[in-house]
Image (cartoon, rainbow, N blue to C red; front, side, top):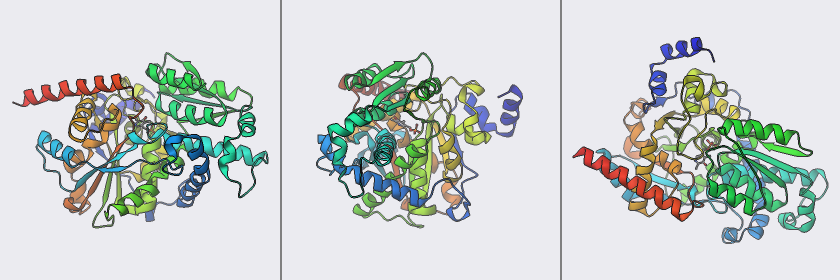
Length: 448
Ligand SMILES: *Cc1c(COP(=O)(O)O)cnc(C)c1O
């Protein structure tokens, strides 16, 4: 990116200037299209339904090897929770009476991997394992997938190597499922990855490589090394259709959960979903899935740290993954694991550009404050990144988005997507909580 390009963009978009100055912004996407107006996408609803079938075929295997999945018969899913106390606390703190209902999608409780990465990461590895088994005639149609737990299968997968670059959570999910299946698995960790994540992976027999650089560099190095390995398969967070599909299945599950709670989604009762966003794979996959399920009545918003607005600058400039935050002088330093991403996913961002309603940014301090408030009011503890969606309803209601779409704000169901937390060690979580508490009370003092 040249200096001239950057000057051209900041002139065209005053908002970009704000973003470069690290101010929090809310951007509404002028290119969001009605489903009926979207000509061609690389994926269809059919693909998403097929992905759900892959999950179903593997369910007996997952229930067999992970004891925490017995009760759900091998389905990896998280609860959708009412958080009325939190909504009340947010109303008081921001002096806004939010209309409509705010719910929390608790992927922080996703079994086995403890984060949203269980959706995409597990899916891509399972899909790959199935392809290998079929190609090598280890599997016949109708076989129970419990055979994937057998010594024979584990021995077979030993010949294959899987690699992935990660800031932590993707590595955890890929590492856990790949090692369980028997693959040789290497995780290429960026400098910001937490020590406990590396140790947990090593304890499961995963090879952990550490890098000085950020996520993009860990991905480049991992891609290079894996592709140079015999029988190596690289899971590419910067360009993966399979990760994206794995995430999209969440929309089908969410539809069921909303029905069970007697929550209607239709033109009069739209759904607004707020997703913490790194490369945009999980957020984009879910946004895509929701549009397939609820058509134009699903409105998806992404949220990124002020220091890592990779998808936002990609969409504003129209350069998608070709631009990174460092190109415009932003440092990509944030304590939000999984969101510390300088460059977006090419595959996901191309789709998100016509699917999503907007993006807002948030400061790290705000994340910790929300973490404390959620813990205090609902006894739900999540990692800092996972709180970012909680402000979405408040941010969007302050814009003209709702009036422009002629929506009655009282009839909106808002869902903040909590993306991770359950594997965070207790001491780390306590530290987050008390840090958030300090920030919360400093803010309260400053108001008085
Ligand atoms: C990875 C991650 C995200 C974002 O997912 P992307 O696919 O990178 O957009 C959000 N929250 C948490 C906790 C994550 O680990």
